[in-house]
Amino acid sequence: MLNFKELSTDGQDLELLMREVLFGLGHKVYWSGKGPDAGKDLIFVEEFKSDFSPASRKWLVQCKHKAVSGNSVGTADLDDIIASCYQHECNGYLLVTSTYPSSTVSQRLENITKNPKTDITATYWDYVKLEQVLSSPDLWSIAQRFFPGSTDKWKIYATTSPNNWVANYSGYYFHINNRIGSEYRFYLPDIENKIVEINRANNSISDNHFFRLRSVYYDDKHGTFTWYIDYLYPHGEEPITNEVYLEMFFDDDWNQNYDFKTIKYSSFSDHYDRDHYDFYDPHVGQFLLGMRRY
Image (cartoon, rainbow, N blue to C red; front, side, top):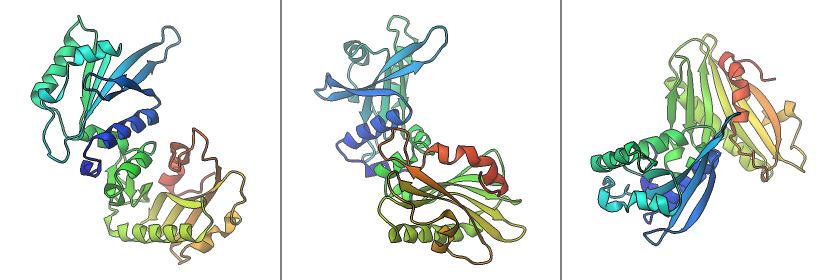
């Protein structure tokens, strides 16, 4: 679980976190002028694409950081939601909290949404929803920046397959796959050791060159591992070595197999993230079967 007490007590980290999440989800995001409480308000535009009648909704976002006290967000913590939305010409209101809203606040938001006279959709994201959204390849790097303590620990998620999982550990996001069985816990120390190897390799090569673990395949019939590792190097520089020699950075025991992929990146690209979904999605089939990537 993410520890929201890692965020600054003044609430600014929660606002910045939410801003990064909204950007990561592809929305247009900006700060308003001063709000009713003399602070800046966060606004984003959600666009609904259509070949016939595209539409959009303009959302007012207000963040309430209560993780230290653990208290719920009460009505006294909120201003006049309808007036604030009208002031910013918004027809959506999103309350974001690092704890949860009180039942009174939940009912208030529901009543606003149901009121046909306001034409405002009002809802909330609590700490559970925030963690769910952040636990994805697209947004996990954001979680790593804001929750460095929480994201170093194991988080493993089940999928629709009994021998396939998705894991976050020590700043890495990767898949875990078994050939047959549905048990993975006994070889987690092997994965931890491999990540130590990867970090050691990263420390031994040039700045801005690095290895990232994408998937682990365990052949439980033969006791062998296949490690899917990307080597990324910056545009304008040469790779440290030919792809066939990358294995020299890692353990070469009989049960260790590697699938390396060399990738050139530009850190200035809007499309770039070291754990972008493009590094995973096209290869899920190979990850599941322990096959080499194309």
